[in-house]
Image (cartoon, rainbow, N blue to C red):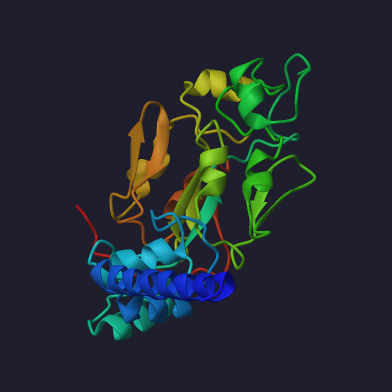
Length: 275
């Protein structure tokens, strides 16, 4: 038998052995995949924003299939996607309320006084950590647009008054703008809520008046007039418990500083009054 033939036979034998080993290993280490995972991925928005608490849509889908995530855990998809995911899982879904970002500060260039000029990068986080920006209010929006830069969905822009504006129809409640703001003036709120206290200052009324024309002065008129007990005072600042707020606008009408704002187009909400 010549050398070439021996080599061919040997190589063929080795290939057969390797093929057998690989086939056996494939069976031994095969992991069953839940077909529902792919089905769930198909109905998800696919933005991989992480708002659900998972690394991305695929991870969330696996979490739902294994019971580690709720069927209504995708805030971007909302109730529509929750219904589809629930159908795949064969369960009922209560759905989720759509949420949007709200900017809780009205102190733009016209309303908030300026202090010494800020000489540094136009980044809110850097300004806050170093020189504190150029606004006299140490609690208000710095106005450098870090929240806008963090938004992946074109849901925010900076207006001419130096304040971020949310385009609610584009907002996915991913929370990136919330994380980007070093002064905690952005929060996620149910879309149907139309009354917002747009101030985060903890200063007393006297000092608020010195730095901003629309800041909360802790007069408590809003607290006294609220019929559901939705507004309360904490650290010199009026705050809203959105679980109780019915959008009645009573607080908007009595606020002497125009700090409390009503968003047109949002109706009354049916919530039980709290004594």
